[in-house]
Amino acid sequence: MAQETIFSKIIRQEIPADIVFQDDKVTAFRDISPQAPTHVLIIPNKLIPTVNDIQDEDEVVLGHMMVVAAKIAKQEGIDESGYRLIMNCNKDAGQEVFHLHMHLLGGKHLGRLIG
Ligand code: AMP
Image (cartoon, rainbow, N blue to C red; front, top):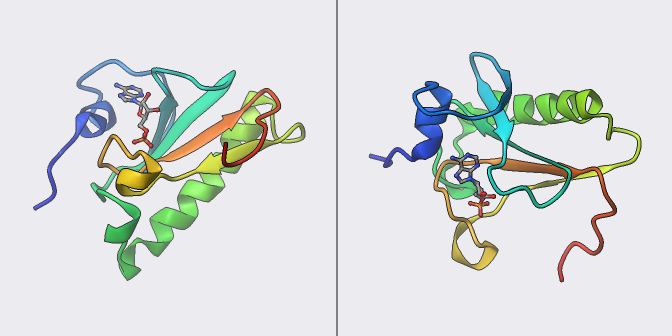
């Protein structure tokens, strides 16, 4: 059984977060420690710990995360200037919160993908 993280509390709105989008499948909120002028995390409402835990049945929610990412980028006014979507998986990628999340980063020139 996967262990809940702080992100489950954000989904249920039990702790404060700057939620920019929420529906029955996903929640998106501003990262508490932003690495760019726009830094939003898009997460499935279902607890999926890592990319490795994605099941066939999750295809719809994963696709929806991309649709929502594009909408938020437009809302933030960075769709034309550009942005980056990142999902970290496990230790070598530096995953800290084990509830799948997509980082949406933009609003400045982001430089190289791998520093
Ligand atoms: P990762 O390293 O990919 O697991 O990213 C986890 C991200 O979650 C980091 O960028 C954190 O700043 C962010 N984070 C952790 N706790 C919170 C929180 N309570 N509200 C918003 N963002 C958070």
